[in-house]
Structure formats: structure tokens, C-alpha cells
Length: 494
Image 1 (tube, rainbow, N blue to C red):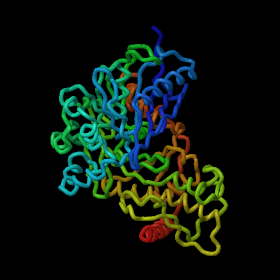
Image 2: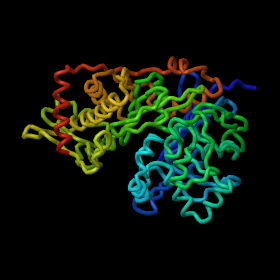
Image 3: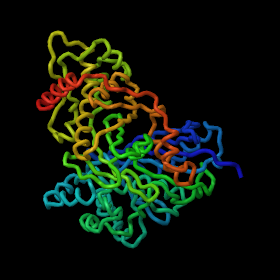
Image 4: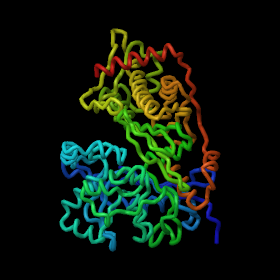
């Protein structure tokens, strides 16, 4: 039998599926990516076709193998990462979905969440699950499916149906319907799992009227869940051995294994996660407490905060104000001035999230005068993105009682050196950009490889992880205080 020298990472996202083949040194050998359909049946409703997600996943795996010049038999393990909270319901015997999946963005259960808040459930939800009571999470989506799809509640209670987030759906399909399982990181986003027990919580199930029979087994983030069977793109017998939600996978992919280590993913918005160790930390600043991963019997927790607008602010400069033709042009425009002067931008184009939680806030340019030009506005937008991340980092330091020894970054915007240097300056800590910025896929590969001994330990992964550039803070403490003071005044006015 040929030596299996590669790991397959499957990254199933909100708009596309992706597969990547990596070797032991984390070199990308082949990739495949394919978009799939977004369904918007009503305002505020977003759905995906589970069968289409599976079909695109199979296509991407086959494409990744072709571009790598490999056979399926060369693969030692499969790791999965996925859009979190998206909720599916399917028949256990046939694998046929009963309804389209309800996507994490979907707001159809907003009124029900408001009812639960009015009944006084929110404090207990946060204490038990680490989450706020919001339609973002899977629990109320599953209740909606059981209530609205005819006959599904009775069939679920009889054990005929499977609920799952997208990780569960992919493993179910990969293993020929043999494994109905999720990992602790995805389960922690359902509003149904006890944050400390790592089990489905009876109180949460009772509150949402969810039968136990429909729920998957909760497993570690790195273990063998089952073997491939009946796939078009892979032979039978390859272990599926790693799973984590996308943001947790990125934290793992950044080798943030030490409490206090943090990563920020800069996409349309920005997600900041901090490893807080083996004891969950309750947030007083409106952050979420979540499970990062469970590996080798040890559970690691994280604090999570998100900014609604990051790269979207640059897209607004391009599409709304038409100050630039391409998003990547923003750095050159911002460099045409040495500083913003007095100009401050608050990127509250969709309200302000943690730690402010002001949905009524609106975007703001402050400090404009006759000398303000396009360069000042572009530079202020980049600084505004970094300043809101600083607010999240400060909240995390207060909640966790830990400093941030290294701030690792990934996502499209990290190619912008000006933004990364300012982020280091305003955080007063090193900002580290990895050689491979696709850290979500890396995290899934790491977890899958650990599950079968492809990598022996996290130390092997830390040694394999390589930095591209370290941005060291250069700003004086006095100058930093001035920037933060102007920012805080502007946020009050937003």
C-alpha cells in the first residue's frame, strides 16, 4: 500500500465550498473551489440547499486532487471546517433533506427570541451556553424546522431524523450515512450545549422543545468520526478525523495554543478570538464565550468578538464614494498623506457591535476641514478598522485578565501593510502575518492530521507554522493616547 503523505482540508463556507490538499510541511499542493446558490425566500430569510453543498464539496475534492496530481489513496486524513450555526434537518435512513438549510444570517426567529427574552430566559442562556439569545444561533432555527415542516417533530422524536450544522451534514455524507456527529466547537454555537458539561443541556432542550433523538453525538475536534464510504471523489476507508467551526479552525490554524494568544480574521467584517485556556471566561463586555476545540481530552475555550464592518468599509470607498477603482488601491491612496491629521472614521455602517452594542450608531467622519483630501479619508478608514479591533482587544484583556503576547492576523485585508502596522501601533503589541493566510483550511487540516497521527502533537504544528512578517509597534505611548482619545470622542458622536 502506498504511503499516504497528504491531508485533505474541506472548508465549507457561506458562499462557496473549497478543498485543499496539503503535505506535512503545510505546502498547498492542490485546491478546488466552487460557489453555490443563495436562496432568499423572504426578507431576512437566507437558505442553502444541502444537496448542492454536498455536490460542490465532492466537486472541489476531485478538483483539488487533480490539480495536485494525486489519487484519493494518497490522502491520510480529512479535516472539515464550516460556516457555523447554519441548520439542517434530514432523514436518517435516506439522507434526504426535509427542508433547505437555514443559514446563520437568517433572522426568521427574531420574534421568538424576543419572546424568550421577555420571559426572562436570556441570563440563563448566557450562563449555560456562553451565547446571547439571538436568532444567529442554531437552536431556534431547529425549533422552527420542527414546528413548520409537517410531521417532522413526531419523526424526530421517533429517531428518524437528524439535525446538524454543516460539519454534521458533511460527515454524514462522507461516511455513507454511518456517522451522525458534531464537534464541541460547532455544538457550542447551537445554544443547546452546556459550555462546561460539553453535553446537550436538558434545560436548553426543554426551553426550545427539541427532542434528544434528533441531536448528533458531540465529539472532540480531532478524532476519527468514521471512514469514507460511497463517495465519488475518494475511495472507501479514508478517516474523517478533524472538525471545527470556521473561526475556531482559524484560531487553531494560527497555532494559538497558549492562553492569551489571539487571532483576527479580516473579511467583510472582522472576527477576533482569544485562547483563554481550559476554563471558560464569562464576558462582562458583551463578548461571546465559546469552545475553541477539544484535542487529546483537553478542552480549550475562547472569547469571541466581531466587528460588523472591516473590508466592507473599503468596498464602500470603492463602490459608494468611488474614491478607488479596486479595493487593493486603498493602501496607495492612504500613503499619499503622512497622517490623517484630525480626521477620524467610525465604521458604524451597520451599527456598532461589541463592546459598544449600539445598533443605532451610524458611520462618521470627524475632524474634516478645508485641507482634507481623498488620502486623508482613505487613511482614516484603514485606521478606523484597526481602532474598532483595538476596542475588542481591550474588552478581551479586561474579561480574561490576560495581555495579548502576539496578535496573529489572516484574511484578505492583511496584505495591506499600512493597516497591519497601524494595528500593531494601536494595540501596542506585535502583529504577526503568516505565510499561508488561509488559516481556516490550515486549522481543519491540522485537526484532521492530529486525529490519525499525521502530526504527533501541537508542537509539530507550531514548528511547521511559519510567519511571513511581524509588524512591531513604533508609535509612542503619548501619540497612541492621542489617537485613542480622538477615536473615543468620535464613537460617542456616531
